Image (cartoon, rainbow over all chains, first blue to last red; front, side):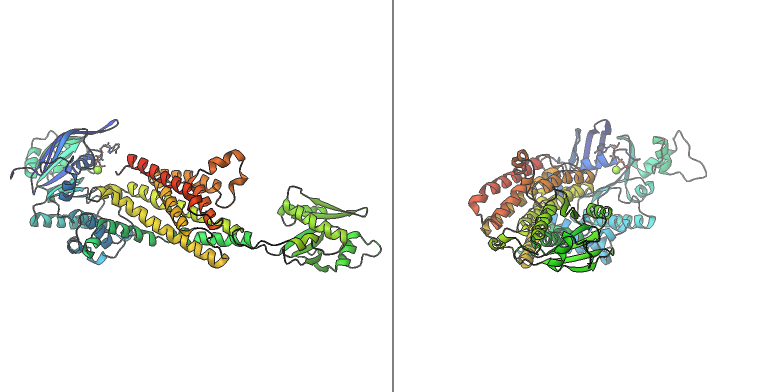
Length: 254
Length: 381
Ligand SMILES: Nc1ncnc2c1ncn2[C@@H]1O[C@H](COP(=O)(O)OP(=O)(O)OP(=O)(O)O)[C@@H](O)[C@H]1O
Ligand SMILES: [Mg+2]
């Protein structure tokens, strides 16, 4: 049991009519591990993550969470995971506190945990503010707070910092790093930002066109850069961006 | 126990929907104030037959001048005989004003304006008057549109008076017994229609649109990615709407009772049941049309395509018996018609369960069928 992965994805495919969004992905994530999924727009990140979240079904292949498939274990797994979608607008005219309470009620969680989460995401002074009046960063923090309500064993965040300024981004990173210290939660996070992956995650999965191009630890991947066909400009520090560009021929943030 | 309830999904979902509803100023206006204003406006316009003022054009000044000399005309002698008050209107035309009191049919004030033919035609086209008098060869001529019932009425009243040279009221007046029993006025017809329409609109926008909007904002997808029970989501949405519909209908009725003294002649329990059945029918329809689309524009179109024809055809404002004979059996099968007619039959005609059992059953079945069909194709993502 001890070496059972929290997530195991086996040869998963998913198409939308003509578009092959995910084309044969295998993935294994250990308890407590933080994994970044990097890829340009349309790479298939959201599709992959939503299949792990049980929101979409793969056409072929299998997904296990704690060794269980979604089919037949939905109730159990819903309590096990926490997530935030790429774009969610909560109810405009509910306050931060009311929104937290609403989502907490879905897990049959009471006030105390809501207070705790409110402190964790540092939105205490905004507890009475309506959704419409929150900044982008505050909204993302709330989305993260909602994902954390049930103290999930597995946390899945789809682009939690896209569109945020560097400060707001760092606030989110802070929360996630604290969580890593204090719990054994595993994290799957999709991002366009190499820096985010470097700051937060133990390992990195680079995908494009629905396939994994590279995966490994940061140091491992950086080591590979030395053998790249395209040499980065020498005056600059070599980064994972260079790896990415050489793999995909594109910039991450395109 | 209290702790259990206050942490329960359904409680919080209902609370969220109530909050969203009461924090939306438009809901208050369209749901409560607008129907009341409508009943007030239309009720006053069509219910209280106010004393009427009828404007009449008379071609030529000589009929109205104080002293026509030797060329006294029929019209002139009529004004003299009836002691019609002389004056001038805003345009500076000579006028004669004649009040014919009538406490049964309502008094009429006739104002005769002297003008030339061309001016009379302009006024006619603007709807300021509907009859033009002229005198030729010792005969009074009436120019009017025979298709216009108001013009016909003016003609009948005027010709009666002119023949007698007196401001008379119809002889048969003694036989007229004004019907003041409630239930026969326009307001009595209108309020049940407005109540039914309110339920339809509230379900269409409050349930359908709310679902589509939540789907388009991915909130639906986010919610079902938790252990939330899907049925709770729908139950909360519908419950809050139905409660709101009760409040709306109650306030409209209260207003109509205070302002127009409308009453419920029939069985209140039947009315209650019919109201619930109507709510159920429209909630089912609302679930069905919002089952699939994630585009609010499509939702808008669907809602309008469904509710507009019913609003026009189902006899909310005017009886559908004005529509062609063949269409009436079709119109009578619309849920809005069924609900409005049912409420009317209870409120006005004093109907009970016996008369409304069929519409109640049909509305209930409609709701059930569309609800089940809607759930079959419902997209949570
Ligand atoms: N519901 C859908 N219907 C049709 N095509 C879809 C659907 N969802 C995704 N796709 C397509 O699948 C491909 C992968 O999309 P996906 O959203 O997974 O990419 P992504 O990596 O998350 O991109 P982004 O960085 O822009 O969020 C894209 O080509 C997209 O257009
Ligand atoms: Mg995405």
